[in-house]
Image 1 (cartoon, rainbow, N blue to C red):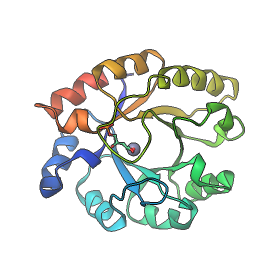
Image 2: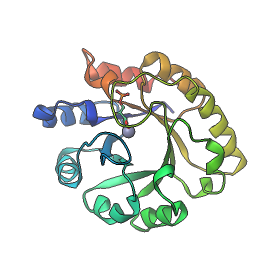
Image 3: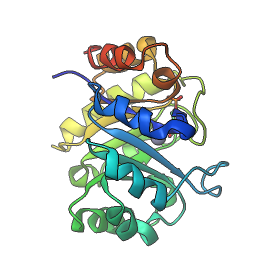
Image 4: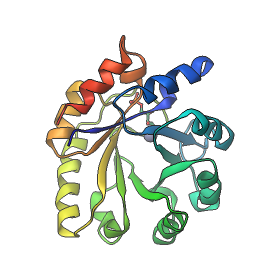
Length: 217
Ligand code: DX5
Ligand code: ZN
């Protein structure tokens, strides 16, 4: 199986969003990555439910929604309603993470947990068997176009070991600073899915760029 590519619409052209959604529809990407930022958990504000609902009407692939918000448990039903298939919350933002994960699954969505660069994968040990996705942040969340943090490659390897030890079926997704070079090392370290924003949308041929990323494994 090739790498799952989840292009981040944060780097799309919002004046021509429809064209960028169509490009992803026609590409070899498997998911749409949607970054929700609240200006509290991260120092930036992106977009919310009304835009996601509109994206849903045109997107032909699952919406992989990455919540960078405090108290994500307050909004799980609303994100389900606007079309999220995969809903990922930050471990650092949810005090009762186990309950939050159960809530996400109760709506039939796949449940993900994201870790900031400073957060150890060991903290997932007791929740891993419940998860569908672990999203490792390879930049500090909040902005597209940042440089890749090197120790993320080792983190993927450590997480793979922990997934095996806990008999979890969670996919390993990595987000931030992904390009062909960092993506290749992540794929070799056993990442299943790569998020790419600026590398895809600022490239001369986004379709080819996505295709290249899917073939890194
Ligand atoms: C950052 C977001 C990312 C972002 C990635 O906080 O979670 O999904 O869009 O952008 P690039 O690929 O440009 O680093
Ligand atoms: Zn993201």
